[in-house]
Image (cartoon, rainbow, N blue to C red):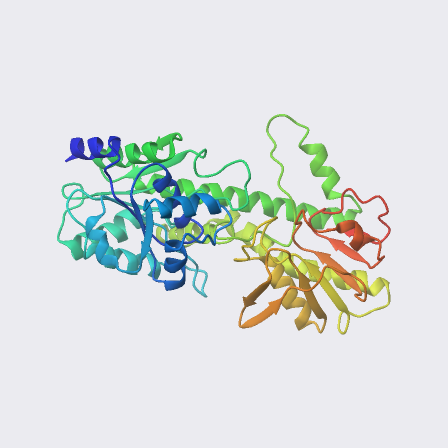
Length: 433
């Protein structure tokens, strides 16, 4: 069976299924189809399925023409009918893994997807989870569900592994194709065939981990590393503010060191589908072993506090102009969680807006990428990028296509949380985080 799979991979006879056509799944499906593997995307959202089948793109990291071309060539299609899993030789699971209201892992999307997949898988299929999750998920949760639902035996009848997604929306340098993959699998045969498949699809380096748990922990480490260092930058920003020191200049000075330092920057707090969430997966799992991840939990506390801190700074600026936050008109620039993308998942800018409004401020936002958003039951629409008539401007996201000079010359007080106005010379009305 292993030799046959390796042959089929080399001959591009493998039929690929990608479950979940979101920010991770659609780019992966496109790359597999581009590599010459007939690919079907599975999603329960009819709108996504219809758009893919029409060749219409809805993900920023996917090139419109590439998607339309592979759909026209019938290399990529989409469906909500999971019975087509029976025809797949390789299935990648790319479903959301959020936290519940208690900040604990919510694996219902994994469970429901795997349960549905188990009804249709055939002998010899390769199944890989790409969704970020806690160490042990592949072996403790997915393996039993697949075996129970299919009647097949992992390692004998099908091959199971974990390969964490490494999607960085808006990154102009590192995409799926040139970012190395990490693969951990149950058994040597599974590791061999799954790694071979990723090399055939992506052409990038593959690091073969000794187990799925190692690969799962590796992904958590990646994002926890960033979360902790962002928290350090945020705490330094708060301290530097008290000491009257420009934290941005401090970071610029520190990063001149060619070793031992990597620059991270302060802001409203990290957002997106990974950094604010993944450390909680590890903290939750660690408690099973009677271990408390104190550094991780402290960094989360610091980052979670940043929206409140930004609002405190906003109130302080308004007080200097003899205006209360209550009743003041505030324009927030940026709703996306990072620069030059339309993704506002876990964006702390939305928390800033909500906290401002709870304090009585009249708040509008402008974002050239996020025309509208719904957060905690409230929908808001982007307004024109014009500071005239506002009492304060807060830069929450530093999009490059915003005319910051036009904002600055209005002389409206500005709280710049991202150092977006670093090139503006007249800075009398600009205050950095």
